[in-house]
Length: 469
Image (cartoon, rainbow, N blue to C red; front, side, top):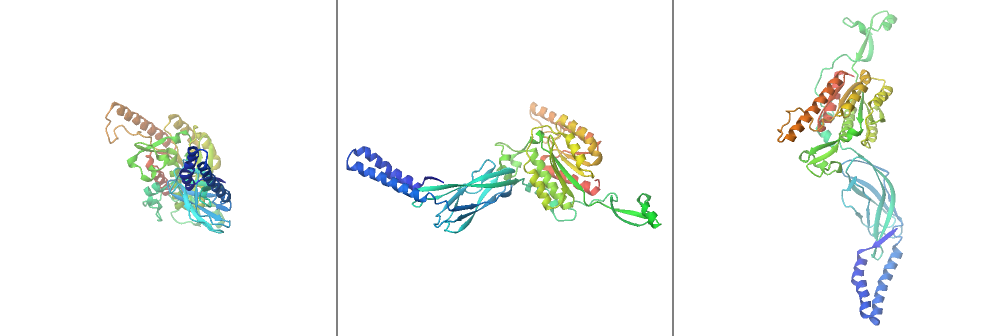
């Protein structure tokens, strides 16, 4: 329990105690000196008695707080609290607040207030916060204060709480761009595409009919029945889809967007604040948004969705399943990912996937291959993996990596000309990487950062409709 002078005590000190002390030195010995000393002692006595009888005023106050609160980055939420007065006297008013770090900002008042809490009653309260970035955070204390009985002091108390705040990425912008995919329709907003092939999943046995392929005849069943029997197949409806996210050193690469092209909701967040002409985020943020969007689409398509993250080793591997509960498991596993300042180990990744995934699956890999050495290691490691699984690779196109004469604005200076030439060479190298990967049956996508989700979802739906898995 702590205490501090309240405003009335400060006014009394300024208007009464200070002049009285001055009078002691002014009048010297005599009646005036004793009168001034009496005033000072009276004020001190009243203040001491007020503090003595009010020191335990918050001792009967109880606080209940949740253990875990889930929220979304950039969206306000309230932490529900319950204050109970177990004492015999009412608490006239109460002010409370949390010690906040750089990851949060108070959405309302920094110090919230409550009216009187009667004796034996409880009151619900909500402290509104605005999370500025995703991640897992904790609040270990709640500070409260009230006034003493006479009103000369504020009595303060610290409650120890174990509040865990889980801040998830905000997918609102991606869902607006892909709104058609989230409509409850049969094709999830896609166009009608002819189903290629007859499927690979066994359906039933039936009698042979004229025109059936000899390859489809079940010879064992034919021998048992004494007449030709044909196997029929159906197109697979449930497939395994895994999103593999690279959070090594290259995932920390910054992505700059002009402020005038950035949503206002993002400009207020610390992770997007550039303090100039650009709003800044990281490549890993886009990867995680894409992974969650793909999980939502796969859930609506009825597929099994899994998640893998790696840097110098595989640190998260979630087996493919379906359902809302599984989506929450995936979300809880990736929201704390941060860039790791190590080189990616693609060989270790390929070994781990070969050991754990025996059934053919679609692997959507979100990596950065802008470094030539990293791209070479990736190509060498994917040669064995591509024989068993279908691999789609997506990386965000580096800023300025585009053909030489494709820019809307002509370069005005010699420096801009060299910058355009360097971007052209980088674009050419990425095209060559894509051509090498195509020999392994791997498709490389190079979308802009705002089109990453749309590109990955389009690739996934095309693969599903063409029955390539």
